View 1 (cartoon, helix red, strand yellow):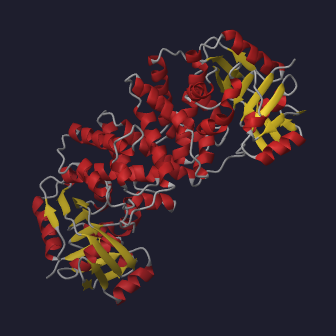
View 2: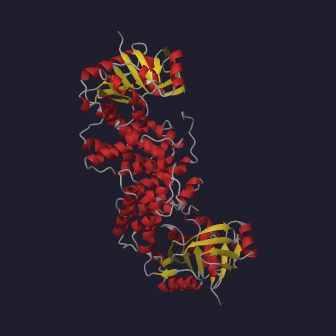
Length: 315
Length: 315
């Protein structure tokens, strides 16, 4: 009997997992919009781009209809974890749940809600969602997976989940310790996203430029070094050098996700990116002045969208 | 014979100086737009608000018509000093020039251009400009004035200029050393303007809030402390505590000038505010990581207004 896999949040990443896994598992998606569920029940998810395939899954927006699963994959935005997972959190008691989200801190929320075995996940995989059942696969990087330490997830559980993902045609690596990979991406992602949110520049050449005093590359370098120092103080040896990742990304002009959020006045994932580095540093009394400063600026920026002056002069 | 005073840049601050000084001096304004000059030659400048008066001055947009002056007051934006003063810079050879501009670094530019005695000035005075010849006087604080050290301006010259300003009905104080006053305002102004530029929040209660980890008041406090440390390292004892100035300002919801610039995609004065603190710190090898970081972010933000991706993906 194929495993039963539940996908929480069927955006571009969730759709890529769902469509691929449909070939090796019974896939159920839990989504917010009933019309999204109706489309997915009527039509297969179509993948174009790097892979060309169709995957037929089950979907519902009604928690009562969602079955118990062997594996959950949470692929909603970090800020939406509680809302998206909440109604079906108890359906994974006898399985495990993988966080395929940005940053740091989602695993804690998932563990708290599901009371089950949690898998730390980090993915750079990316795609563009063209409709409720069409996603274009663009970047086919590995999903790095490892036990979430507080839930004592056995490595065999991680390995089995990784094998399902690999069998579906996606790339995955099971790691005894997934923190070096997660922190490499966290530091990269936190630094680039914070700068994008505040400057509104895409990931352009500016991010790697270090010639004159005013150049933004100096700031990226300092943010990345600060993140590396925090990781080191936590005893984590990085998997890749985030500065090298930044230099490569700076050639793409890719708009980081937080830039989209800022432009559309959507709550950002800053609490799970720069805010997570700042918080972890504060927890161990290690300095992280730059990530902390940018975290507070972005929170201030979010507040500016709803701020109304209480009758004072605003000339 | 009354002194002849030249006003460079007749925005709200320049108009307030010009209209008041007209009662004790022959005032000539050098302005950019010919129609602005025509209006000022035809009608007096009308001051409303804290003072109610009218002052008749001469004005021109043609440097050839601008006379030699006993005192110049440069009241354009710091970023426009070269353009605004350039054509008439040689008209102050036998007098002195006061910088009534924001931040640090204008005196150097003025001294270089005019080859005359320069006066360091700092003013918190503020007004709202309603038309080319109507300004509302809102905040009647003192102009702090002192010798600009490199031009060896005698204190008696500063004193005479201050006396003219005082005789005109405005407040001014001549100081043997104006750097403590200038740096107090610089640190306040740099910290508040940088945060306003990046968060797009006016000078609201957020700026003084220090309860939770994410609160913006912590960042303002750190920026101000960092500025104070740089001043101390330069041997400057502050005139007022910028943190107290910030707490008072945070009750006003006033939009700092850089917020206006950011909203209208106008080049900001960051080079003369946070950038000046960062540069001074770098000059003496003193750390100023926060002002330096915010300086680079704001320069990046300015670049985002004209950035065009060179054909890479921007999906």
